Length: 367
Image (cartoon, rainbow, N blue to C red; front, side, top):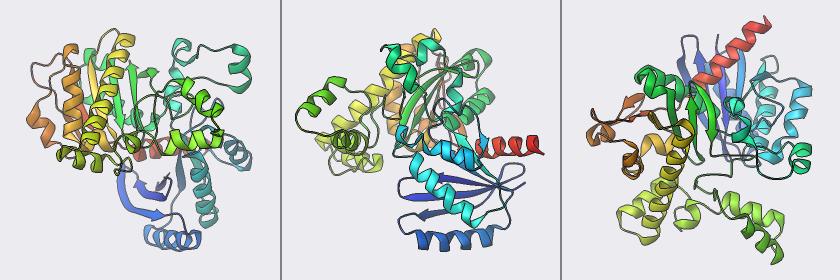
């Protein structure tokens, strides 16, 4: 069975082919600003890739309605549209690309795989916000959690390399343009830093993460519209605000950091402080930290960020082997030292393989 994986970003569409045995075939990355050009590039890609059995799309927010992958028909497509306001940076473009690909492959089933689904196991103490029920209930306001497809893969890989006791109290640290930390007990999400939307929690590339809600009220009283505030917190904050000139790109931040740029030094310090404090907080939920996984673009790509985070949680019993940390390239690698009480690994994010597996299961069930 050949599955095409579609991962839509704000300005690009990443496609990859996954065949049986989790063999990865052809890949492509296409700009989405020009629809006619995209359609031409898509037809060329499909011509070279050959016939596909289904297309799986990564959908960031499934809301209360979707807690597992689905085959998308017209009714489901309309329902997905209503969730766009919960993840305005992610869901709308994903649905737009879903339509573009469906036009090119009208006979291939479309599957939606949700980043929120992994967190369906959150207990009510973890997903409930301390605000009145007459507000939360009508609007379905609760913590959803994100990066679930990445967490699914990371948990599977962690189970292969950690002993049972360490794996039982696992924290997954996904660091990319978006970033979150998730506590996993016995393979199930029990607490996570992202909430109702992907804006809560850690400092991210262009998202603020946690701030005092009073700031929003203050800005509203001083003439900022809801749209202005949302645009600022979603697209102009985080590393982009802390390190001017970086545009929120961690590679640029680290380049400035290496030249002792004061803003970049502060940004890296704040970024790693927040991650470390959330790992420590989630270890309370788990009754102690057994193991830690770094994943995502920054988690996989920056030995420095991993080292700084590890140093800030040494008191929890983690000691990184510096040589192993520096040697990571891809796949899964344990980087904790032999004497470390807490185990740590870097895991290459493979949401594509998770999505392909869920798509196969759906198609086989339907057959």
